[in-house]
Structures are given as C-alpha cells and as structure tokens.
Length: 91
Image (cartoon, rainbow, N blue to C red; front, top):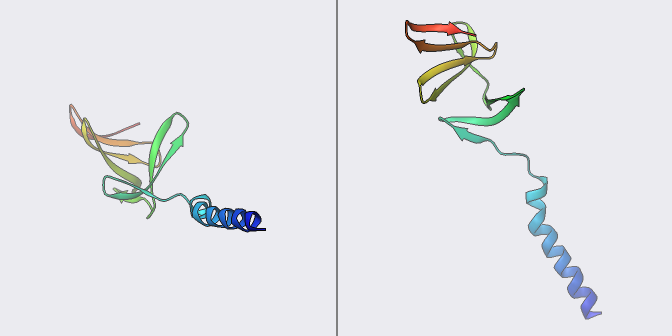
C-alpha cells in the first residue's frame, strides 16, 4: 500500500513538473529589437515579426543589418540596399 501511494505521488509530482514544458506554445525570440520567429521560405530563412511587418515606401517588410550594413527585405522578395551607385531596389 505504501509503495503504491509513493509511486502515485511520484508520478503526480513528475507530471506537474513536466506539464508546463509540454503544453506551452513556442515563445517569440528577439532579433535586432524585434520580437518574432525565424521562418524558412524555400531555402532561405526570414524573420517574421510578432507585431506585424513594417512599411517602407509603400512596401511591407523589415529592415535588417548584416555585414554589408542595413537593407530592407520586402515581403515581395525585393531588397532595398546601398550598392556602388547608392541606394536602390534589387530583386
């Protein structure tokens, strides 16, 4: 009887300890001051903001900073970045 009660108590304690990790939704990460998640689109990874996309020159997307500096990556796949002839839109 004591062994059964002890086993039941141990199972109950373990279930309360592990349950929150099993049922919680994925939390958002932070990247360059924006909350959201990385999503894979084909062979490329893209950051999806939790608060909706930003707008720039009538286009929806996000600003990113990498080794080459700042650039805008639009939802339509166009990139606005600084090149040898100044800032321009690229495919």
